[in-house]
Length: 220
Image (cartoon, rainbow, N blue to C red):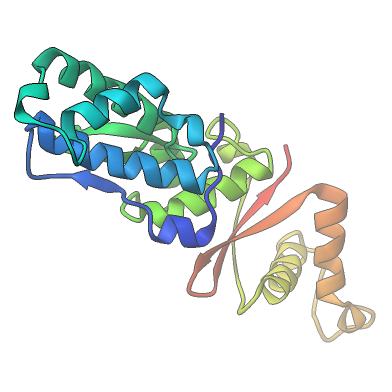
């Protein structure tokens, strides 16, 4: 199930859930808080089942008592919470401990998408931006297996219309179809219209990566 978070939710997303403890009583509280936020954002009140909620209330709820603590139940509940958070992870991410630090828990880019972003010349240190980009690519039917074939390069422009027009002109020039932009009839060409034709006819798409830079993809 692909989880869709909006821009504001991704900006506030708790990518790092815990980084300073392995105490189950602390992790239960932190994991529970994040799971509740994800359940609200995704409109999935069933993210945590009744049994898990009952154990959390007993173990670390506001009215819990020291006598209520049970190590085995805590471990099982922590595992249930981890699975729920992994189920709620944004598309292209998973929940768990960091590969380099077993006490650092959060949401991490999965290997296939990390490789795809590297192929696009992007790093993997901006989870908010890459989660948004991955969601957009997925909506266009692009996954890690098809990124390489569908990627067509980059374009520049202050907005999508300008970037598309610039790309259409560069593509035409690169194919040797435009001896000189000052010769008739080429100076009459509406490059924005040419880009719209690429979008409609060939499935071209632009994806904003900030700073006036855009990734260009084509349906495969």
